[in-house]
Image (cartoon, rainbow, N blue to C red; front, side, top):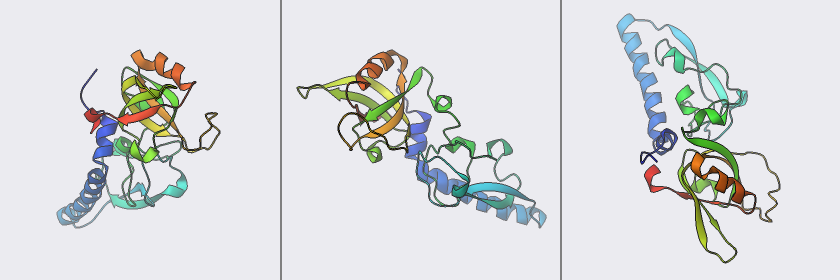
Length: 205
């Protein structure tokens, strides 16, 4: 198993710097474009219309279009449709919405190699293990002894819907987790019996 942090974990760790850099890059290129030619060739670019949290599923009400000089961001990184797109990192208002900060139309597209995506009920508060976190999965037996079910799993998304878990507690989160293939059977079987605890893996910090 690789000891390197996943791309999503690194994006989450540096989310504020990435957002600030993108905005600064846009401003710098506007100035450069005006200085070089005396005029700006505008193109439409999608940006966050308000502060958006990591894991948020984008809708038309979340975005706005602005004019920016052509070439500010490579065309293949720009998005034209936000349908079913989920943010991998937080996007402050005005952040350009580009493909690297999106999880994608399906969770499987963003799952690391060698993993499978499993829906899990977690007893860990969502704010402690945000989208992109590299985590280990644990479960406690009836005697209170903790057992590790998987290591190096990645939190891909949280469900925004509310439903009954069947575990008799409201303090649970509904998540989609990329679990290493070798651990998937054990995790899937245990997930039907009780909630799992996600603990941040130091490799992802």
